[in-house]
Image 1 (tube, rainbow, N blue to C red):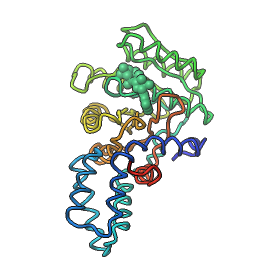
Image 2: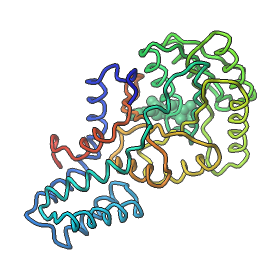
Image 3: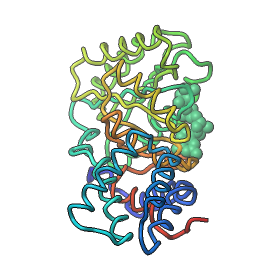
Image 4: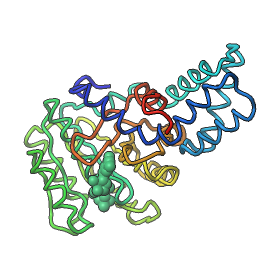
Amino acid sequence: MLKFFRRNEEKEKENTARAVRKSRQTWFGKMTTLFSRPELDDAAWDELEELLISADVGVTTTLKLLETVQTRIAEERITEPAKVMETLKDEMIYLVDFEDADETLEAQDGPLVILMVGVNGVGKTTSIAKLAQLYIESGQSVILGAADTFRAAAIEQLQIWGERLGIDVIAHRSGADPGAVAFDTIQAAKARGTDVVLIDTAGRLHTKTNLMEELKKIQRIMERQEVGAHKVLVTIDATTGQNGLIQAKAFTEAVECEGVFLAKVDSSAKGGIIFGIADELSLPILFIGTGEQADDIAPFRPHEFVSGLFSDTGGSK
Ligand SMILES: Nc1nc2c(ncn2[C@@H]2O[C@H](COP(=O)(O)OP(=O)(O)OP(=O)(O)O)[C@@H](O)[C@H]2O)c(=O)[nH]1
Ligand SMILES: [Mg+2]
């Protein structure tokens, strides 16, 4: 992950550990218990399959994972349950480990523009504030664009974050054209030499064609500007499990997305969703949201996250 995001390794590790607690205590702890048996019979494999599906890994991804694990343990003649568990963890890490994912949001000259999209209430605006704080702490200048002109009070919500974080927010009146807000924000960033532009958008149901068209329009406006790079991030609410995945898929089909901000991991027992996201959306999870404050964020690190899910501290209670 980006060096400049490694500002507070301990805090980030602590956030991740806290965020996976519910998932570990609910489902993954049970897997750890299962692997502490002397041997794994067919019933144990069935149970494992059920646990993975219950943890919201998704049926397709679960079957694929288990097949890979079974092939590997047959080839490598692994029978000891503890080693089978290590093989499963390995394959899980492999599934969510995207090469170069850590460079996706690297700030660059001219500026880096990030558009945040997603369904209503998933955590877009809060996640923008968290990203803004990370960039600021790593020495980048940031500007926010209030392109959610749809929901009453959305502009004010972003302005409050802007005040708290000490950064400017470009806003038009409520009901204005979100594309124009995006345009003005990018122009302001270019004029001021700002490093990072974060643009908030209105939450929308993936089934509303006109609203999805509006997003495409904002993306086109963004792409027409000469900037260092433009990226679209989709926020997924970790508590919504497979539904969130289906919704996010509609976004990735409408606009070209670079990665996922997985919010509310702390409130979710469905941490297994990360595997479904990586597998079915073919998108890297870049950050996880671990609470409601601006510093409740951690860069997604596959090894750390998967180890946290299985770690027996906290047990399976
Ligand atoms: N526990 C927890 N709550 C979060 C997290 N991220 C966001 N929230 C909460 O989720 C609620 C919705 O967050 P917003 O950021 O307003 O979501 P949004 O996607 O911008 O919502 P709309 O603009 O209405 O579409 C708020 O109460 C946030 O505090 C998180 O990582 N953990
Ligand atoms: Mg919002």
